[in-house]
Length: 408
Image (tube, rainbow, N blue to C red):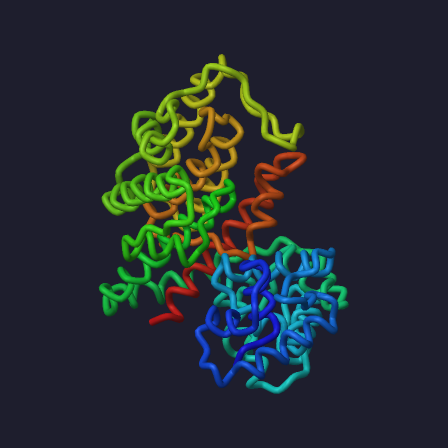
């Protein structure tokens, strides 16, 4: 059934449009004309559109906010009609109050509880910590706060605590290794999907405009979307080359060195002239003067120091806890050295995954719900906090493992 939000988005993207054209744009039969016209009347009553010879959007703050919310959902393969349901919004409001919640904290029908938990987990907004009882953590994201505000609900999130998750990660790792022996080909397919999702999330953080559906089509089906600039398409394909090499190297336990790091950068950033080259000028993080990058004259010295720490770490067998701790430290240190003119953050994430996957920790996704916290602990941070970043990476590792295991 067509919703008023479906109709609104068609009008907003098409400009002035007639009802018959909305019916065609939504691929609905002519018999649906009256129900779609009724949705137009509802939008008019609520002050989103106005009718004349054709229908057009009223460009006020309310319609702009609605368009941004729907666009965010479409860009990230989220069903906005489900997210905009008032019962879902009430669920989110209650779930946000307590860091770890169960159905006792929400008090809704068990089937509805399970449905909303599954949906929010699928979209990357929720971490399931245990199945019996179904204990969860809603992840703080500005989209959820903006969504609540739009529908007159004040969603206030819990004060986060740092929680050691290594026992849960080790438990999921044992399950994953058993699954790997039985479902190897299925896991390979899941990893291909995970790679496309990671490429999208990593490049979205850097401003690439490709939506998740378009990134998946480009990576998984080699269908090139026509509505983007060639540079944006090339940026995705270049990063895939670097990620593919990283996955292959990590599987073979290839050790990192400066030559390999430069090779990763050269592949990922071959759409710029400085790909694979250490910068020879100072740079600043846009809009964040608190994030200090290395003076260009000190880059080689600091990279050599970092690689010595890596070699020392790699000289002995390490457990899961040590691998996550060092991988998160390496990410933070590399990002702050900032050895390149551009592409430092995407390379930092790639190198962190190289270290984790070299220790058989199958991380490939950066879930949407962690974007805000990740950015606040990295490029948008006022001060460096390796401890908090380590706990964030633990959560991301756990969510990746749980997603993989629950899909089998």
